[in-house]
Image (cartoon, one colour):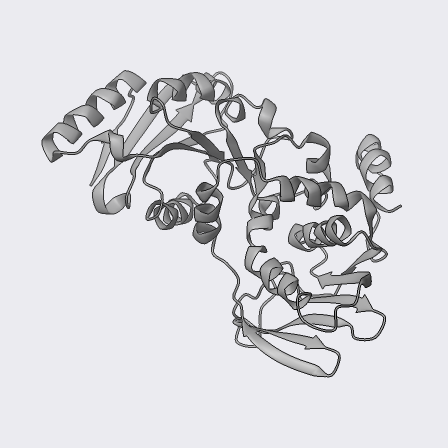
Amino acid sequence: MIIDLPDSSTHSVTTRLKTLREERGEVSTGRVLTFLVVTYSDDDLEAILESIHEASREHPARVIVLIGHEESTEAEARLDAQLRLGGNAGASEVIVLHLHGDLTRHRANVVTPLLLPDTPVVAWWPSRAPRNPSSDSIGALASRRIIDSFSEEDPEAIYRRRMTYSPGDSDLVWSRLTLWRGLLASTLDQPPYEPVLSAEVYGPAQDPAVDIAAGWFADRLDVPVTRRSDGSPRLPLDEDGQPVVPIMKAVLHRQRDDVTVEVVDSSTVRFVVGDKESRVTLSRRSTGDCLAEELRHLDPDNAFGSALRGLFRVSRPDRVRREHNHDHHSVSGVEQESMR
């Protein structure tokens, strides 16, 4: 069920929701959290809602999608709402709010009356995220703040995140690596039990998942780590045109038998330990799957914070320097530091 409420107000939205629940015999107490999604008019709304639909099968929520229409500041302040219930919302109730004019600068004031009482609040920025999510007006309402550095235009976004990180911040590039990290860590529980001396990570030059994987190695292994570009496109594909996991190859160097994990195709990676080879099923995770994982644990992700700190120790010899017309402070403060 989809109901449009043009030129509306938050009071009208809550009143209509209450009426609909009474008509349908539903209660809001089954919602386990309030999920705030901050988007813009040029984002793919249906793709975002599909990911929410996938995640909501596991986490029923009140989903509030805020769509900012970046018009002239002189445009009339107006709120156009849409309610999605039942099959159009999965296990959740979805409130889509189109913010026009001055309302785009007051998202928190618009959304506060719609928050479910006594439930956690999670915020997600599918595309453009604030520089410091925890200090953003929407981020301040949430105990969990999810961004996606892969969607950022700035290839250095993941490096800037480590300077503004606060407990509760998370990133979908980290969630996309959960299964990959588990498989790789399991290889170190197998003989021979040799210490890792250094590590190399290969992948697309502009995929921050490769960077955070290198930061994770640097933090957890406490060894020299090199992040290399393998020349693949930002979204690597196999021979059949299917997307693969972002880490094309990782090598853990040891005294005798190195550990190598390498992508074979969209559903398979190859593990090589010394002269022993095995293959494991591993696919690129969907956004909905990553969101569902993020919503399973709303406490701070300390492992992610540690991986961000590990970025400081990663060597990037293949990195292309930014053009001189980019912000000088950013270059000297972040980029030079990350190349040490």
